[in-house]
Structure formats: C-alpha cells, structure tokens
Image (cartoon, rainbow, N blue to C red; front, side, top):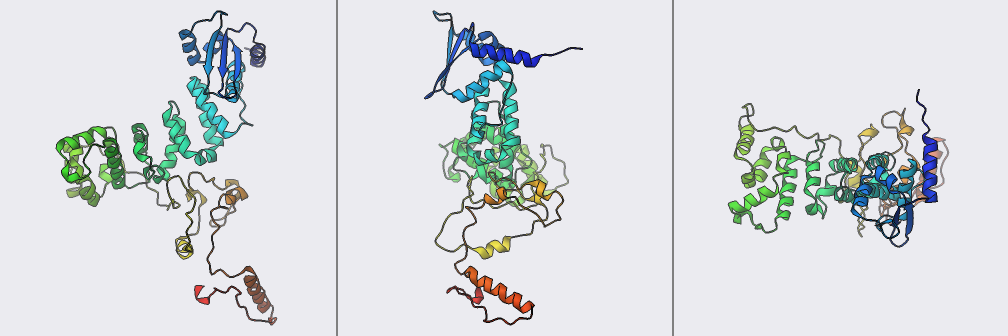
Length: 409
C-alpha cells in the first residue's frame, strides 16, 4: 500500500515560496500597485509551459537572476496563482466573481490548463447570474482569447435562446467568423432559417463594404466576393428548413452564392418532395413551442420611459398561467427562482424567493394614471365584507381618484 504525504509536501513548498531562499527569478506584477515575487525557475517551469518558454528566452542578469514583468496581472490575482503553483491549493470562496474571471484570464495566459478548465466550470456552476449580467464582456473576451470553450458554449446557449442578443446588436457585424459559426452550428438556435439567412447576408456584406448597395448593380465578381467571405458559414445553413416563400424572396436573389447542385436540390425538395437529392440535409433546428419572454433590445432589459401611460391592457392580454416553471426561459441576466421552493408544488401554484422578485423592483414600477387611491380600495373591501356578514354599510363606495371612471374597469 502506498502512503502519500501531499499536505506536508504542499506546506514545505509554500514555506519555500515565503522564504525566497535560493531564488533565481524575480517577477514584478501589477501596474499601479506592484509587487515583486522571488521564486524558483525549476518549480515554475515544471508547473507552467508559459514560464518554461519565457525562461528559455531570457538570460540571467549580473546577479544571476532572471527578471520577468506581468503588468497586466494584478497582485491579488498573481498571489493566488503563485500559491497554487507551489502549494497546489486554491480557495475561491471569498473571492469576488470579477476577480475569479480575472484569475481565469491570467491562468489562460500562463497556460495553466488545469486551472483554466476548473475555473470555467466553477464560474458556470456557481456564478451563472453574474456571467449573464456581464454577458457582453464575457462573450467578447471568450473569443478574444483561446481555450475558453466552456465559457463560449455557455454564452452560445444564451444566444440560442435569445438570438437578438447578438443578431440585433449594433456590434453584430464585427462578430468574428469563429463566433458566428459556433452559433450557426447550434441545433437549438431559436430563429427561423430564413431569418438566419438574412443575418448571414448582412454580416457578409459588412465584411465586404466595397460591394454595391443596390443588388441590381451586382456583377458576377461581386457575388463571388460575397461567396468567398461566407464560404465557412454557408455550409451551416439548414436550407431544407427554409419555407418556399423565403426561398423565392431571400435565397433566389443570391442563388449565385450556392453551388448549382444545392440550389437545384432546394427547388426539387419543394416541387417533388419525395424525389431523392444528393445534397447534405442538415436536421431542422429544435424550435421551442414555449413563447420566450419578450426582449426589449439586445443585452438590455430596462424599460424605455415615455410620457404616455404604458399599455397595461395589452400586457394583460398576453399574460398566461404558468403550469411548469421549467418551461419559462428568463433573459440572460435574470436569476431563476429557487427550484427548492417548488419541489412538490402543484401545477400553477408556485412560490418565489425574495431574491428572484427583487430583480424586478426597478422594472415593474409604472402604473395606470386612472388607478384609484389605495384607501378607496380598502373602503370597497370593507363594504364587501360587511355585506357578507349582513351588516349595512354607511356609504356607497366611490373612488376618490378624480380621474377614475367605471368604464376603465
């Protein structure tokens, strides 16, 4: 039987870090607030491929010390990293979510793959609400740096549910090709295929600004230019899920972007659906039957303030009874209600925790101008209760609000 003494090993190496005895590397980190760490190259290069590369590139100074600088890594973040390198221990419990994310980016830069994977999983499992709140920043960063596939997949899952988050964004045209393709590959992307085609064409045109704005002026070379721009995106369109009307209105004007056989098969599918075709037929996307919450704009849940009264009537018409909490998909930065409160609830009878409800405190503040005063409602309730008990009431209920009209009920 093999006995392991990892705790003792961890403590001894941590003490070596703290003492700085026989150090041969000096690392300065931070920008405004800096700190210098006296460390050992043999330990760092055995724990990080990045350090090994850097030590091979630089030479010792006159004091036989190799000097490194990381101005873009904060002292707080590097302190966590260096203690992990020496002691193999990591504690995230008391760290702010933003610090954990900065730690992830720093570990990725230092090619500490074990931590990169662990921190991504931790953020998604424990900090999902924060990731949704900072969605734009997180999504952009996940594609600016490599090796954040777990975070990317989390973000793409949100985009699949709420496509306007990206497709209606003013920054959509600057979206990288890799990011766009990863979205197009999603089977659960909640967009009609004809609409996806339109967005792809818009993106391609934005990448080729020299193309004429009037399609009637396009030459064969112009179509070839756009086809080249979209060559990695076009294979991920579910052409055989596009309606006949959209094929005529949206695909036909750009038929030169498609291979001749593919365009022929698309038309064949509508004319003689049972006839075999040679083109690859991708499965249709899994569009949910549940109506998703209405998004007022890309990455923005706040209501626009207007001088006119909100249309409460139309909102009530759209309202529906919730029979299954799992069927409700909330916007990206809204935390879901606590599922434990409704573990044994009957359909349509649910409880909501205070944290969930407080998220809407700054949203649900408007009220109709003709809403009567609260004491008028109290008088009405008291009057009804008296009638139920057989007691006469002193006066007839009359709303005190000057603008209240019975027709408004």
